Length: 283
Image (cartoon, rainbow, N blue to C red; front, side, top):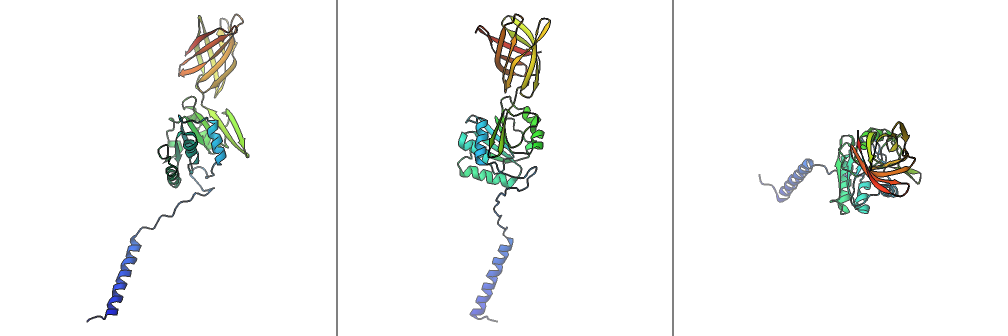
């Protein structure tokens, strides 16, 4: 049976609509663009961004330069790592558990022309290796800071750590800043110097005992039959200083660096202004 032209047209249109409907049914739904929301739940914390002004202060506290590698733990929308690269010229990396946040952070870095200096990775901060960083930034809860603390203390002496709002319990901060009711803290990872050392200073050789709690330092030096206490002890990263009064009643001031797990060296200054080199090896 022959169909009239209008009928054939109707059939053709119906077939085209059916094909289009089938194609639409098979096509994947377009992914809705992710927009971060303040207070959204994360793996260990809710997301609350650090204000830009405090981000800049945290990076200035850490004295970030273009020679640094900054790693932000729990990087959220990426603003801290991006600021480290954009304003201070540092290389930076963010570690974030939420893949959507990682995606928008990488897009933001790319859009600002920072893709060669800033990278974001999806990972668990407690399972990540960040020992190569010279600066660590974070905005985590106190319990998470404490969980990370042993790993942070094992980093290279002199590594700077900044935290928005939350402390490291009894590891006192080296600096605290207050801005609009918010706190930022800085710690400098101290060298590990606790123990007994053989101190060589010119013709003199003594046993030096150091006691350490984080960056706080105390100790004594063996002068024949007596143990003399140390004065003005200070440990900042790998830099160390102390003073002692020797067996003749002369004060000696020592400044120097911890050059390895079992070695220190520096300059000793006498009261009369004379200077000489000193060194110490762990016994």
